[in-house]
Length: 322
Ligand code: UDP
Ligand code: MG
Image (cartoon, rainbow, N blue to C red; front, top):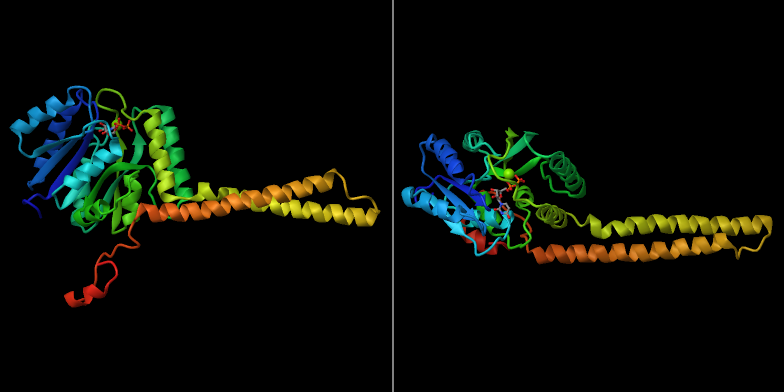
């Protein structure tokens, strides 16, 4: 425990002047019921409205509230990363400012944490007040990502979650830049569970996730956890190559059986298919290399050790990762 703080609540803010006062009240109300020490860290992600002034006012009267101001808008994922970086609590809870994630659900997460879970994520069973487009694209994206990766990233979950300090430490140690935090939490491992909740309508204002930002997040998710898009050309190429070879065999057999000249359109097509197949296989093969280079460049550790038994301090210097 650092400075006696048990919980750190991390709240990213981007132009949230309409919701910040109510958000603070609800978060404080819920956290006070824990009767334990906490901090609420607001990360102002380069807001252009009065968000900063409003939080500064709150900070003056309530020392449990902390504010980090970004020099410009760096994005939601950068904001929650900064929150985790500065968090002092034994458990860190990430929650949106607009009260779409009901603060009361944090208590359920805390209960699970006290039962011994290291990650408790919020699973959205229903989404209120969001457009059909948003719900549809989100549903499709989570399933697409799941089908593309070997990491078990739970579907229908955002960044609303509680993580234990050791999970926070592991996340902070990951140096990669284009972060898809909810995927990294899955990657880190430890004992994970979920609580279900109904995602509420935004308290006020509009979504700060433009289509462009949504696309960036989606591509960060896919490129961070799958290199299938890079190697897919290889599958296509193999198929084309096999069809080409079969066509060539057919053309040759036909020529021999019917005793006709095989220099025809069929031969041309077969040769083309074989050549295209080989080219796509080559691209797919390059994808395999690029994928591995990309993995290396992310500098993720090879593994994360949860605990060790019967290791004495003296043994540790023989370990590769210590
Ligand atoms: N947010 C942020 N930076 C951004 C976009 C959003 O810090 O560039 C914050 C925003 O203030 C909110 C949370 O991230 O607290 C989620 O954003 P929003 O509610 O607009 O997204 P949605 O719920 O519509 O997906
Ligand atoms: Mg929202």
